[in-house]
Length: 281
Image (cartoon, rainbow, N blue to C red; front, side, top):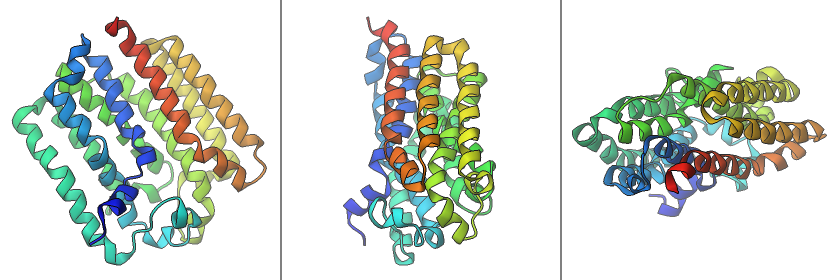
């Protein structure tokens, strides 16, 4: 049985903010006073959207991605490689950490079941058959709307209603861009494994243009809800794409990619305080 540290590595702690951040933003949008951030449901599912939810996303990804991952140098030192003998223990760990939260929800907070169901569906079938969206260009990007649903879940958990659909679309466009950008360093490994992604379809330059278009479209749609914050966020990611265009090789792109979580964390921090600030003071 792999050690707990192994499961922690598989959960990609540096990417936890991609799930936990939207959860916090959803809470900020739903609450009317800061005290609601520390209610029992907010704390319980805040715990879920740390390790368990990330182990679900990335663990299932690694279970079904061995043929690609063994060709990818990034897996050797930057991420963990799930060999066939470790699939069963990892699957059991995913079930053990996620099921208690899923079972608890309909009994105590049924209003949030829709968002949780959508989160699990897109998380599982992004990587798993029969859909395995990650091998279908453009659909692979679209399935990354999964990162929006922790925010929708938090909103439903506190407010009781599903958030405005336009916010889900804006967030979905943002996560599509996030996914496509992160797929650029994997282009060669995916092509060698015969796997098609939006990045292998469009190539490096085409994917960067695709990302820029998605970021700008998302910001334009979000402007009605978050105003000037959408403009600032669009500017930040436009600069990131410009730097990526200027990088002359794959190593240059990968160097920007390694800092991608920091850029996203800073963007999420800005968005959280833009929404939460007026309610806190």
